[in-house]
Image (cartoon, rainbow, N blue to C red; front, side):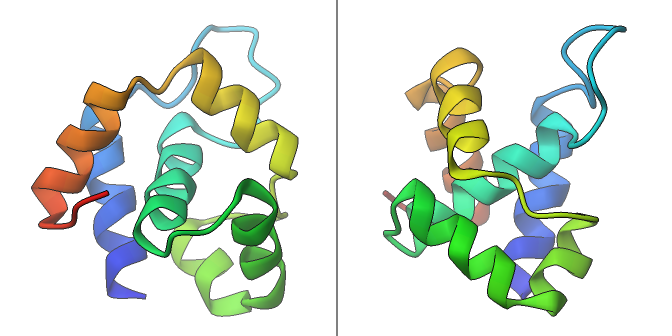
Length: 98
């Protein structure tokens, strides 16, 4: 849980809440990035981290998720926004490595 809290805080420093004013606003960019940090840290697949979020009410609460992002949402976000440099920077600030 602590890793998720820290990941969300660090992700908030790296990215704005939404990519554009007309974003659907289902998830913030920091929430999605924190999910990807958990994915990398726990060595999960996109489906694996989505399943983990679905199974853990506490983890969703810590990340402020009202619902679980679909694995394809995480994958598209990673392809569109998150560069390896950003992920490495966030993991480095958390003292984690890929």
